[in-house]
Amino acid sequence: MNIVHVAITSLSPLVPLPHYATAGAAGMDLPAAIETPITLAPGECQLIPCGFAIALPEGFEAQVRPRSGLASKHGVTVLNAPGTIDCDYRGEVKALLINHGREPFTITTGMRVAQLVIAPVARVTWTVSDALSDTSRGAGGFGHTGT
Image (tube, rainbow, N blue to C red):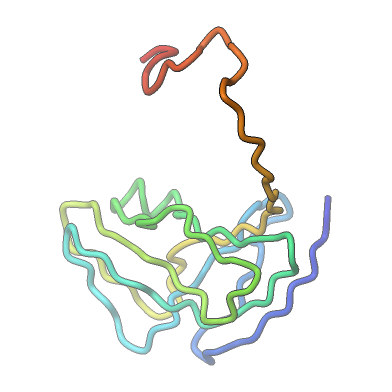
């Protein structure tokens, strides 16, 4: 297992810093750092502050991902999943949530609303070519390999 050291600053006394819930967890739950409850109507989205800022090392990103329980039970998910936090961003980490459910959903202080995964970033250098190599799939797009 690779350990990445990341500087973190707490921006809210309302919530703890993110942490791994289990030894095998890939993501850390993100809390809602809000003073009063926020209710998302069906179809509504809102940016939810998480109460901290980070300084990722160069070559890494943080991904804000949905929590499966909120999605499966309530239809609440991260709208731009995964949301990308670049290594040069120093503002508060936030989760852009949307309610795809049929009922209003209320977010309360400290509620775990998303998860954060730290991942390495590959940089690309393009090689311009007049033609690409052939494959058995070719240019087949959505649904090309089955249903």
